[in-house]
Image 1 (cartoon, rainbow, N blue to C red):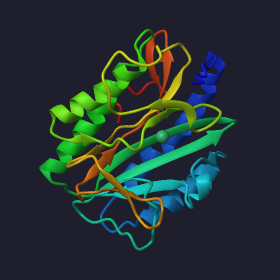
Image 2 (image 1 turned 180 degrees about the horizontal axis):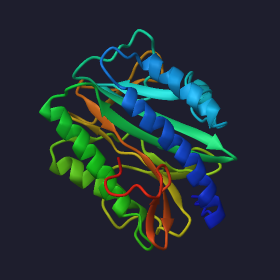
Image 3 (image 1 turned 120 degrees about the vertical axis):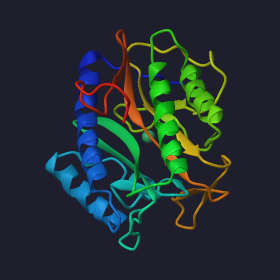
Image 4 (image 1 turned 30 degrees about the vertical axis):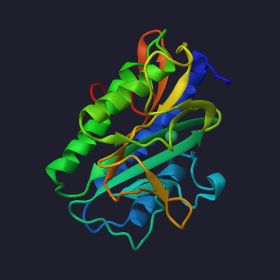
Length: 258
Ligand code: MG
């Protein structure tokens, strides 16, 4: 397994890419409202990506048609934006977005409530975000990779939800998906030790019901097999001697990951 450790200068470049991701996702979060279509979000993301002179990482990746993945309600990941998909009060929408800037990638995701959502959905979003927070807290020198995975799974299952197995986090750098996989499940204490300069996209995908996944006929949209709602939060994170450094947000932002 090739683990590519980045120099501080490379981590800095990844942070610059990550700040574009943060800017776009932060703006999109503010746009989410009943009546907005997922294509409206795509159009904004496309325009803002160009303003940053970045290259959208997803468009064209294995033929994906858009710069943004928009996954609504029972859709887990890889939903394709559509003018016909207007968001409704009580929906949740996961926004997954990545860029390449000066040769380096950033990748992040956030699930956003549309209008007023049910207490159960509020809990799903909170627990998924907290599972990412807990995973990021494990990004420390000397810890093992599966300590991250275990932090996600244990928190999610303690709260009565389930983690998706078919899609995992990943190493990231000058390519979007480096070989290293970061599952959201597993016993602690396994896998490679975390080393300075490792850069990981950590991305819990959490289902309210069972973990099983089905892919729609568009060959992209992954939905829960049981129709239950699903949430997705992600950050690109670097291992540093000072602990985890979240690359897909500004350094001055602290506290909860999203
Ligand atoms: Mg990712």
